[in-house]
Image (tube, rainbow, N blue to C red; front, side):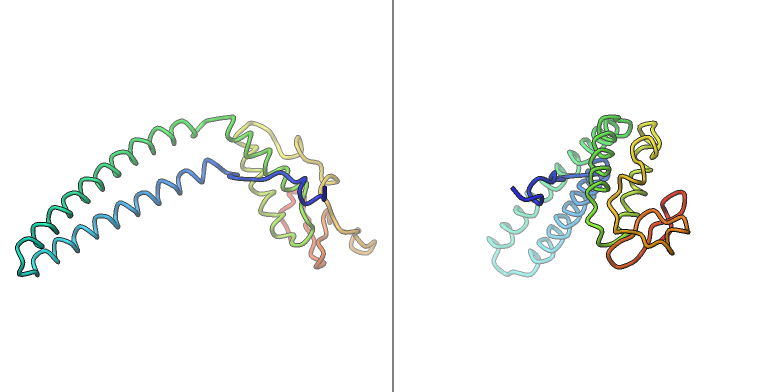
Amino acid sequence: MTDEFKKPVFFSANLHDDLSHAFEDLEKVHSMLEQIVRNMEETADLPENEAVRVYLRDTADLVLGQADALEKWTTTYENAVCEQLENNHLVYERDTYQTLTRVLQWDMVDVRQLARWIRELKELTAHIGLTLPYLLHVRQIPTEPIPEDVAKYPVFVLDRQGYCLCGMGLDEI
């Protein structure tokens, strides 16, 4: 089995962020349904055929009822889920572990991606009461060999393009 198949699969890192985006998407669907209803009502005023007019109005009422139900359930679930996740230690631990695994399996291509992951890792560890040095030592991060003339500076990681991640907070490129 190649190393490519041994890497963990990340279905949803940052679950606490992804769910809020899902609820935003549901709100957009609700807005679209309301727009469809408005269009149907405007169109219902145009036909001369009474049967078509009645059909369009009935369909608009049906869609509006479903849109209202969607809005009600979206609000209900959003409040319940967000409240549950807000201080859910296990979700933050899982996201921290997944982000840490990403950092440790970094492919050395772009140090900017690594810097983003480290920034996320700092935020996540703050939620679970840990600090980054507790979970990650700089020497654990994969790096290209650092030339001696560059090693004089506080350079910790070098990518394949020659860009360095430096600074005591691992936040300077």
